[in-house]
Structure formats: structure tokens, C-alpha cells
Image 1 (cartoon, helix red, strand yellow):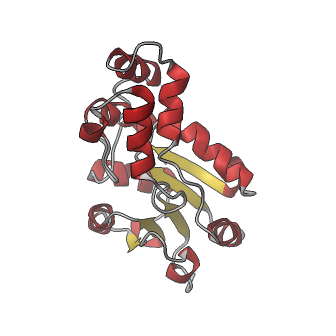
Image 2 (image 1 turned 30 degrees about the horizontal axis):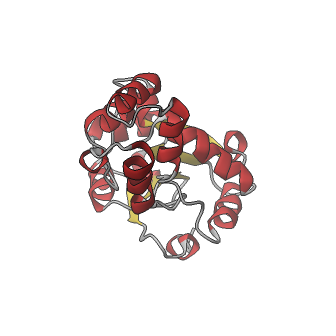
Length: 203
């Protein structure tokens, strides 16, 4: 029986729209190289470097604008990134709130400062106050560790302070799920478009 639950964000708590994001970068900014950087699970190049905490959000924006259409601004980069985020799946907020009454909940995400700003706004818009609903947030750009590394999962285990077997982890990437299991966590694969409550019906 789990004593804590850890959620991935993108693809689990927040829907992702890859095509909308690609369109926003290519048509909105004229940044054609976005296809080399954007990935559903593990971002690449300067996008990945920002999520790993190796470069700042400001430097990321500067590097994107250097290859974008003249006249584009930092806010345009942010808006293009926001296009990836497509709101919370139906029923997810209620599921999370119900679980928060019974379990300490945590977030573990390969993510960046730009996207996290909008994600936290989306949580609040759905009645989830992150600072109270989630006991802790393990965000890659802050940790300077990325899933699926064992170092990342060990940092989460240490941070929560429970035996790995007592921590349930939910992610939409089978690579991350398998890595979490290798670290000793109880991990479940979420299939986007399905009901989170069904996956966690026994919790």
C-alpha cells in the first residue's frame, strides 16, 4: 500500500499538444528548428539544457530569438511554449484533490521555469493550490537532474523520506516507469486520454 504518490506533470496532469507548439514556433516565431528540440518525453538541445538547469530561461529565450523572425520578443517565445500545454484532463483535478486528503502528493517533472509558470496557473484555475495540495515539487531545472536517471529517482526517494517501495509514481513514459521501478518505486504507466481515477482506483 502506497504511503505517498508522485505525479509526472506533462502528459499526466496536463495534456500536451505537440502540433500546436510546433505551429506556434514555426508560424509565430519563424523558428523552424523546433522539431529538433521538442519531444513528448525528453527535450533536446537548448530546450533540454534549460530543463536540466544548465541554461537559464532568459538565455533560452535569447537563443531562440537569435534564430527567429526579426521583431519577435521574449513574450512570444513564452507564448509559443505555452501552446504545448493543453489544460487538465477532465476529472483529473477532482481525482488529485480527493487523493490529497488521504496521501501526501508530490510532483516529479522534467520541466522548465517558463512552462511551470503556466502549469501552476492551470492548477489554480482548476481549484488546485500547488503549495497546499502538493507536499513537494521535484522539478528537473531546479534539481539539475532529469528522469530517467537513477540519480533523479534517488533524490526523490531521499526528499520524501520514505522507503522506495512505499512511493507510488505515475508517468506517461514507459522508460520513466521502468527506471522508477529499477529504483525500487511502485510505478504505473498512465495512458493519455484515459481516466486517472481508474488507474488509481485501488488507492
